[in-house]
Amino acid sequence: MKNSKTCIKCGGNNIVMIKNDGHPDGTYGNNIQCRATVLSGVVFVERYICCDCGYTEEWIDRSDMAAILNSKKIFK
Ligand SMILES: [Zn+2]
Image (tube, rainbow, N blue to C red; front, side, top):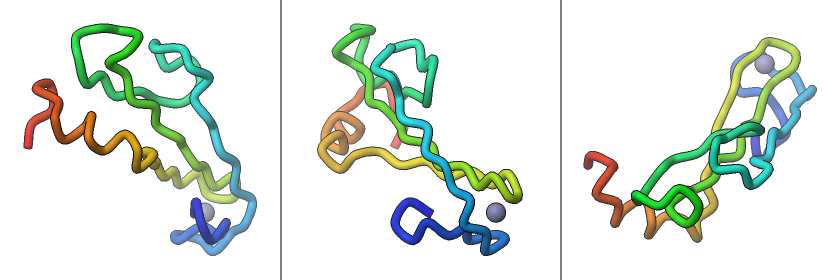
């Protein structure tokens, strides 16, 4: 949905993106806590929602993959 702007479940194209607003509490969007520090240890997640059927999809920026892979808080 991120790239095609088309829902993979229903084929709808009424897609919206909820971008994290930078708050570590995930007020808008979603967060993954990778380190103990609240402010610098957060990876932001972008959420895409199909407003035709309600299906959601989440994406993380590729620049944050090292933080995910090196986190001791995430099980591999
Ligand atoms: Zn849909």
